[in-house]
Length: 579
Image (cartoon, rainbow, N blue to C red; front, top):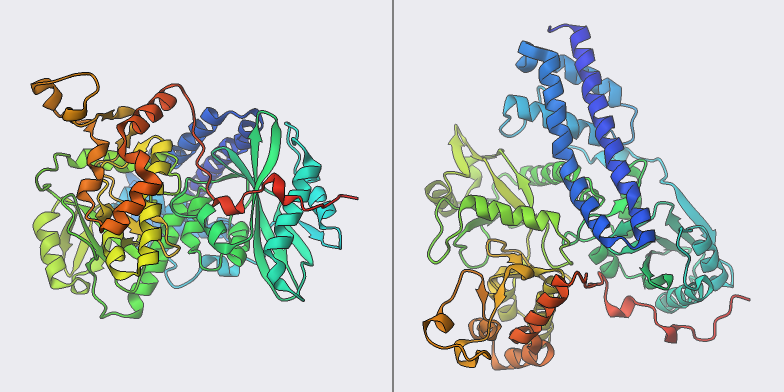
């Protein structure tokens, strides 16, 4: 079977397999516009889950086809070197060839049980940035801006029609124009000269986004227009021109966009012009190409790892986890999380339950408050890169997750996340104003998660991290559950039903006592008072019970992915006219 024709046939089969996956991916993605037009939010959520699961389903089908086609030659390395060469030739002219190569690697890693990388039969390319060679301009609408900006904004809305009507397109255009003018007023003598927007509309949850940039003679600013579809029609809800706000919308704490892009790499290149600090792996991931995002994250990290061969991997800052062992490279903003073999008291979860929690997060609306945890298997590190205390603990307590292979440590299973500063440490390190902002956002994070039917479980400050923009993000998932699954109770002395005795004092596995939350946070009086004043409801059992009733009634509570300051209001008109 190991012949040039056999290699060519297998390469063509793998290529056809990716084309099939890509077509299915786009078919699901294309439903997003219809879901938005019909206000079918439940259907949009079903599509999101289906698309997330699609890659693995198609990869399994591809593996079965290859097994049937290659038979006993399935693990013939000489044959696979030939397949590699033929496949490289097939995809060489494609703009998105990196996506095709990742698909190929998925198959070789499955058949050869690769630990680390195998440059002999895999596409590795650790030494390049794949998008650097992309010069193809992404499809976009371009608008020259003259004195009447509202009319330009009207032309923009005309170029993005929907089956459902705008509630008032002219009024939306006026509001968008006013917002752009006001927020870019600081440009002074460098006025807006052009607006460029991707032709593809981005959809997620209950919003559609027009994504692009504003151009001056020497400046560029992001421009994202968020559209909502209410019972009265479609309207512009927000205009985002601050990179910080756009970065949150495209952040690693959000669910993935549904954007029907014919090619992805050119869109990533464009997005990097408005989000230059956003890692390329996160852009691929937020566009729904999670497997490619993992590939780019791996490449970038290992390029960085090679720059300083003496920098050790060490325990991540923060309290020692009872379920997870967490380590990091101090100069790089990632953490690696290994499940411990046994969990310290009082944790009762099993390994499979912890993994199920991470899958739950992966499939849900993360409301901007849950970090995206990518699952990796069989990463290979030199033993010498580990600080001695860390290596001892891994070998003693994570034998199901890691093992020694010669001079290397193979991480058989881990989760990789963006590194955040633990909230409990952050509050000790910053001034009073920054601490107050952080603890108030912590309270808002609990609200946002609850409204998306997620209860964090363990609300201790050590389980939340602070981003560089000061947002509180939850990252410890071993006790996370749905709000609908909890039994929220008042403390026995305050039970409103007159219950008494042992039944009132019994605490079941799903019982939650909101009144107790503040007692274990370890806050100063000033921070505790600020939290109670702004978010006191989250410590009241009645708030949670009412929320449960709304969720049980089928209500999908909106959690906007941008601050109120970015929203458009009727007061934004300021006398503009389309005439």
